[in-house]
Amino acid sequence: MLKTLTDWLDDRTGLPGLTRRVLDRPIPGGARWGHAVGFALASTIVVDLVTGLLLMTTYSPSSSTAWGSVYYITYQVDLGWFVRGLHRYASFASVILGGLFLVRLVLVGAYRAPREVHWWLAVATFLLILGAGVSGNILPWDQRGYWAAMVETSITGTTPVVGPTLKKLIIGGSTFGNLTVTRIYGAHVALLPGLLILCGWAYAVLFGKHGYHGSEKSKPTEPYWPRQAFFDFALSSAILGVLSGLTVFTHGYSLDAPADPSSDDYPARPEWYFLPLNLLLHVFEGREFIATQIIPGGVVAGLLFLPLLAKILPKKLGDVAASSFVVTLFGAASVLIGVAFYRDSVSEPFHQARARADRAAERATLLATRDGIAPAGASYLLSLDPLTRGHELFTKKCLGCHSLGDRKPEESSASNLKGYGSVAWVRGLLEKPDSVDYFGKTPDCGGMQTWKESSKLTARELDAVASFVAGFAVIPEELTPGNWLIDPKVKEHPGFEPYKRECAECHTLGDPAKGKMEPAPDLFAWGSDRWTARMIRTPGSTTHYGFLEAENAQKMPSFGGQLTEDDLRMLVKYIKGDYEQALPPAKSSGK
Image (cartoon, rainbow, N blue to C red; front, top):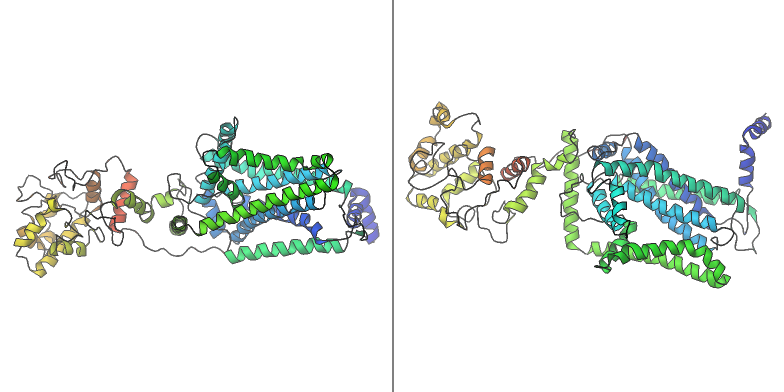
């Protein structure tokens, strides 16, 4: 019965006969582990193709949705983290195995006639693997992929004559954007896999014609089955086991914060297998074309020229030259990769930048977990987060003068804003206005100290005034000063009378027509988002510190026009501490 079915299948498809020919294929010199490298390489490519197909079912290729879809795969889809991690680590393994495969072909002389086309297909496959890895790194549209792509496309752009056009073709214009994602995605899921499959098919056809290359004629020939089959599947299984273990150990592959073209402190690095080129860019600074064009072009040309070398030089000399070239090439690349990693490991600025990037990635993930991702895209997760965007703006715009708790400028010249708007902050100001945390570094704003020297308010009254003034921040925006002042709750507040008795002599509450003993800011809605935003936008207005002379060095500069409304809102909330310090941890599905 089984023989009848096999004969029928053989007659209709030829598969049983093909299987027998594969299993009986002779191996000159016998089975060996070295022959299994090619099978292991094919296995990792197949893993990449299968996991890639799974990722395609959920990935959304656009600059506004890419990060969100990868976040969803990593943290929401059952075992999505495992599929994505295995996909990434298998691509790394393909690069390593592809390099080992080329080295082995040269060492056993499998680049010479009649296997020249074998060799060229192997080189093409290795280059396609590199291209697939680079293109895949961009697709999450996170900081890592975005800035790595910036480095890689900059290298491409240095190609003489065609470089700028090629760079524009890759990124879909002059700047990175939606077309960049769609073009790279098309290349990653269609063009490059198609070419890889084509090269694999062509290699298999030629392999069927020429078979295994044997160099040890003293050893007997033996069939593929069972020993070589065991070596092939054992090595592939071991590698896939290691990749799976690595994926589980790292819980997938990390996802950086969404791509932010405006960030200027991200530690941009290309993929690890392009680190040698990145390192050479620094070596040949000012002559980058040597690192980006002459050396890579020479390497590729040298690899393609190897079969012709065997026709020019005597066999032994040619083998020595070819082996020396390939071993030196991959050895030097490995050393340069190690040097690049070592330089980063001892670079404090790199560690600081990497730590900031990791914090941003964690924050973005937590915000996405708590709030979801807006239709406008993941880039708004951090740009509308006071802790992230506000921290960045405070560093750039405010930290030169103001402190914020432990965050201090080299030389403080303005108040410490830690707790700004709170009862404690106001109470500290009332107790010691000439402290360096308040107006100690701004003597031209010394009216508070003058008041303090003559104040008759008791400690209890100062507490009440502090509570009263801190309450200005919650005055409803639609409430006018007149309506607010006639509210019985305002007049009944314990701090109202002492405020009226000693503070109202200088400070107005929405009525600038009233005279003042000393020039001082209007305090109606002081500490609120709107008052603080006006202070940042126009500190020299008559309701703030317009009484200072224009050329006064202590006068706060105006940031009107320098900040968008969203940025201004984030900065105000950051200064006031109006954000969640900690969020619930993001959980990825482990089902």
